[in-house]
Length: 153
Image (cartoon, rainbow, N blue to C red):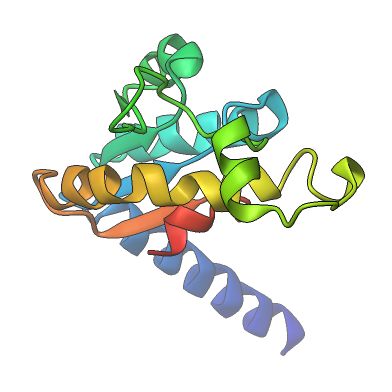
């Protein structure tokens, strides 16, 4: 009895896996920071999705473009209205410090991530919304780095 149940469970799992792979036409969009420990774990997944017939778009800093394109995915930049930078800022620039940090706040309270990710999201989100909206086919699912406050929009 136990072996019959195990066989049924195994067949059920194979069916679920093959159903996902059969969804050609899906468009999976990745939004990520350029750090190796964040990008590298997604590369095999992006390659597998492309191999299964999915369209894969990947938004990340230009430094990772060759890695992204080696998976068969299409690289896209995060676009800013005032710079050619293509990634996500993890620290606050002087203008953001002046605008968002109360005078007298110790630097240790705002230096480094996640503060820069949150403050700079307001700069790239309008273009990101436009870019994702212009994807063809439309995005089916978005896989995002939790540090990216703008990805939640």
